[in-house]
Amino acid sequence: MISSFLAAFTAIITFVFVFYLLRRGVLQEKYAVLWLFLSGIALILAIFPGVLEPLSSVLGVATPVNLLFFATVSLLILISIQLSFELSRHEMRIRRLAEEVALLHERLDSQDRDKE
Amino acid sequence: MAIPAWNEQGSIAQVIAKVQEHRPDVDILVVNDGSTDLTAEVASQAGAQVVSLPFNVGVGGAMRTAFLFAKREGYQALAQVDADGQHDPADLDRLLAGLESADVVVGTRFHPGSTYVVGGPRRWAMILLSKTLSRMNRGEISDPTSGFRAAGPRAIDLFAVEYPAEYLGDTVGSLSIAIRRGLVVEEVPVTMYFRQFGRPSKNALWSALYLGRASLAILATGVADNRVSRGDSA
Image (cartoon, rainbow over all chains, first blue to last red; front, side, top):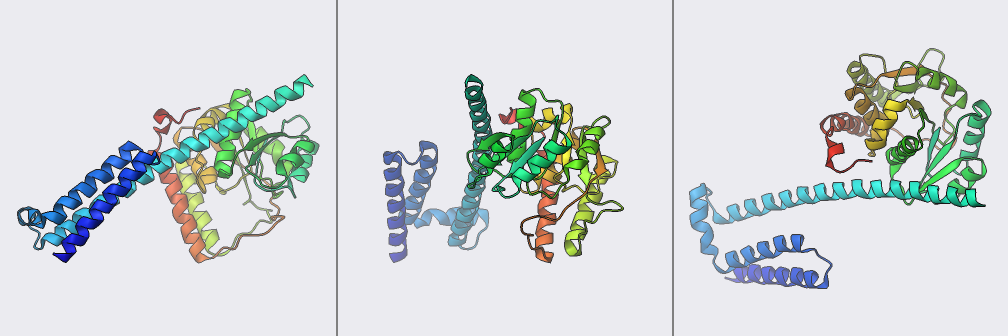
């Protein structure tokens, strides 16, 4: 009982924290939604841990908690890869912008030189 | 003539002067890759045109800026030389002459009569890379990591849009892209001086990582062929 209380507490804290970040405008909705959804699931599982038992027996996992760990780790790996992907795309775009800025800057400078 | 430079205030003026001495007819563009020293000022005073990137993006990004510049200004050829003074601008004639029969000309530091020697695991890594690219190219590329090279109009068009910015992408990766796109890559012998400032230490672990990243660079340029259509165009 104590462990599920801790899990529920953590889920609520996560939910509140993400919501707070969202309200402050530092987290975009598309990212916040995912974490709010996941902390909601975690809260449900913490209150009703029995939900896992039929699920794990259907999937052939001996202990429900193993299913939980496996699902959690898989999900986090997927999210990390997705974030790396986003990060790479942003780096590419920022680099392209830097190149354009440099070239524009040079063009402005040379125009100034021509005027003098 | 493009010179990518990152904190090279000590050698850049000398490199520019040597290029001007040998080929007064070429325009010199220094791509200042987010230097924190006086590279831009020194280069500008030495008579080069300077494009300053707002932060350091690496040699690949600096070179793509140069290719973009060359494309927009309508240049028919772009040569690249390192800012640290390890290349001899006297070889520039041979590089540019090579463009008559090729799209990309690489100055190789490995040839009979060269004083450039590489030993140990680094040597094996470079040989393996060279063999791989030579086979892709169906023509010898003995020094794929050379930063002394020249590009013709077709290569300028390609590299202005697609020039790998990651580590080793600027050398190995760019050649791999050129070959895959059917460009003609040839090489000419060049003289190599030792670095004027510092030599990075190299050991077996370094070589293994180097080889791994280079292989990745070759593979990545193969699967990323559709990158242009994904909004990364010039």
